[in-house]
Image 1 (cartoon, rainbow, N blue to C red):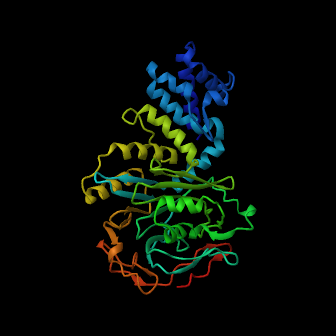
Image 2 (image 1 turned 180 degrees about the vertical axis):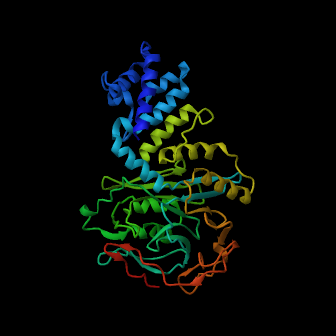
Image 3 (image 1 turned 60 degrees about the vertical axis):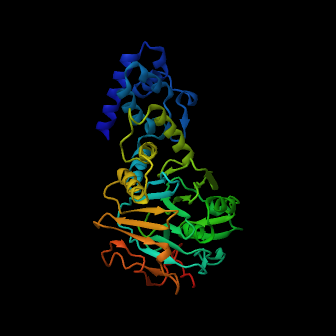
Length: 417
């Protein structure tokens, strides 16, 4: 890190010396001077602050002067350092790489929709693929005061350490994708009078109860659920934000920031990664969109960089003429931003009712046609990873006891059928 800091300072001084007499470079010079031992610190207005990152308006203005490569290298280096401090940068970068999940929502040429996501965790997550029937009695999984419901729709989901549903689709084509977000604050201590729900049950509650994104948003925007987020079996904090998407161009991003639920609802919200919170991601992406992806795209594994690359590529790829090409396109998009080695990736076909899954340790993709699954007889799961699966596995689900949702001090009691 010392070498990195030294290189950054040398770069800054070099740029200062080239632009010290240029009026447009004044704000950049002030900022760089502050970091290299002189000059006045820039104001928040100068920097265009977006939370812990910086929209470098002054530096950006230099690109037309022939310093495009210098500018972008400097921006990448200084964005986190100017506000967060070196120690916080190290923590944020490590968290982003260790939990490098990404999600994209794609429309093909026929107006059909697909959601792809990666699970790029720092270790295997003991994932299993489950089929849960409608009519299944559920609760929030955290004991007394837990929210109770009965599932309205059949669903196929992927579990995480067998304590949480983190990805899946229901029979109506509603898809949920739960990704890591370190800034999450559910405000649980101030929600004592609300019904409780484990973070592990949040996605399952959504696909159990709602058919479309507008329906889900209308119910959830009341912000009357107390999300409980104990420590994961891996020792990590169970902090996540939820993306939901449907078969009719509906998309929403749900985050708990500073103790309250924030919902970004609209078809334009097609990409989600990890940190920073979503409003800040949008500001950062607007910066890169102005530069243009054919000119320069950030290339690290940081969540903000993955967000920018995935946003650009999602709009750059053609609209596929068939579902086969559409699924291949979405897999290509998410593989492009997946952080090595990764764990698994999925693509959901909202309109067709298919759920495609690939493990990084298997050479084959397998898929489930929800119309072909036998949802009678209670919860079931695929015999994977015990067996190598490939192709259509819709008829391979076997009866199994449903996993308990994550709860403080241990796992929750099993949901009753």
